[in-house]
Length: 437
Image (spheres, rainbow, N blue to C red):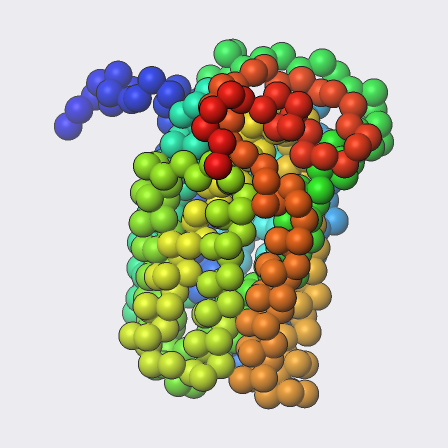
């Protein structure tokens, strides 16, 4: 087996120690978390809950995520980001371990499951802005897009294995052990992130206080129509897709597909699609980043439509695979746009506003999924999810910057500049010569 030092020597020039450790840790947590999502839903169902209860547990995780994200972003731009990430991983590890013990010990109560998933969501609120800021700071230059594609390929590859394995393990040994494995994954990932090399990252001057930092981050966010336009788009799309995946998907699997294993396999095919999409993005560099990415969001409506029919498990797997490929084109393009447009010292705050907008409606959607099924029927609710994805994606294409923002062929140091004209920021002010689409 090659030594760790040899493995680090074999890295590409753009893959520094920090980037490599971040990628390894994300691989581990993705492997555990995908199975845990399936396990949590079936833990609720096995405890006698229904679709509404599954939605409440999912909402309990997302609500604190929404409440604490902006604070988490400001904290991550004031404190060392790697320490924030490790502390958040420790909280996620403890909450998942307690959830696993409750499920393995007997019949967990709904309020207990909601409380523990809420603790997990709190950890995620502080982790996500710090992690995104750390990753975006860890790479530089024209190879940034390739670096993000490789990172996402590793993460999504783990999601592929985690979803398929998680569904099979839930069916074979029950959800409690899958939740315990997720807790162990958080412990391993936290240990890896404790060894991040932060000495080469640019120093960040202290801000003027928490509220001042939040206002500064808001100005950076609101001054870019492409940024807030896409965040509004995904606030709706993530909400309805989250409800379909967390609530309706397990119910359709139970009633029509044969249980947890086929649903886990379908999620695994989605993960396979994201791996293929990330692999594609290591080679393809669309010059109009956000136009190419947004056009690839339309297929996100397909899984909800497939569940509404419902199609057989094989057809659902095919739909999920195609959706994964196209959505990953957006994911890599989005990260590349943030990397080239947002000043490094504000990455976590802007990321927090991004995350906040993207998940703000998810608790409401998941909580209302059960009542919507009762009022309109499951197929109608799923067709509504698909229609909303198409509607908001078409609407965001009306924002000029989404259609015109271009990939840079030369990079300059990030710095904060005033923006009062609502344009796409430095992409317009420092447009490169050549390479325009």
